[in-house]
Image 1 (cartoon, rainbow, N blue to C red):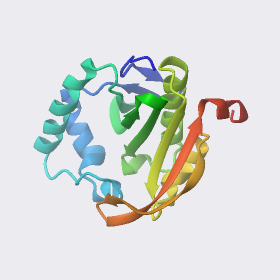
Image 2: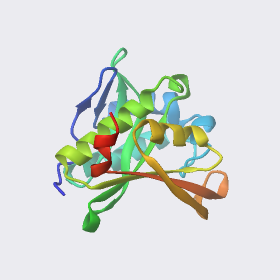
Image 3: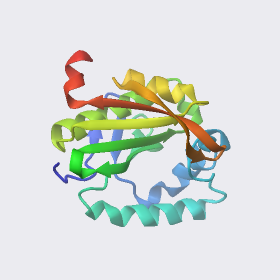
Image 4: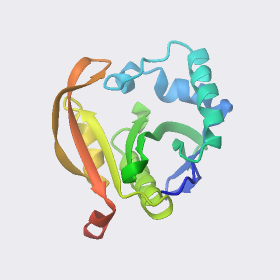
Length: 186
C-alpha cells in the first residue's frame, strides 16, 4: 500500500477534497445536524456548529498522515460540501479498507454517492495499491446497499447484531469489491 493520503479527486459533478475549517457551517447545515442523515450512523447528530468545528479541528491535522483518507464531497455547481466519504478502517497487512459515507438529504437519490464511492475505489485501487474495499450498512437502510452495488460491490453477507449505531445494536450487511473484480464492472 502506498500512503498517499487524501488527494483531490474529480468526477463529472463532484470534487472530493480535504476538509477545511471553513466547511463547518455547510457541513452542519447540509448533513451533520440532520437526524434523518445520522439515523443509521455511528455518530450523534451535531447539536451546534461548534460540535462540527470541533470534529473538523480533529480531522484536519490528520491529513499529514498518508494513511488518512477523508474527503469532503463538494458539489461542483455550488462549490459547497454536501457530504463526506472516508476510510473508516484500514488493514494494511491485507491492503484492505472499509469506507463510510454520508450525504445531505437534499442530494439523496441523484446518484451522487455511487459516483463518489466509485472515484474513491479507483483511487484506492489504482493509486494507493489496495486490494480489497468494503462497506457496511444497517440492514434497515437498504438504500445504502444500493449505493454499494452501483459502485460494483458485492454483498458478502449479514453479520447478526454486530453493529451499533444511533438505532442501537443492529444487523449489518457487508459488501466488498476486490481489485480483480473491476474488469467485470464498467
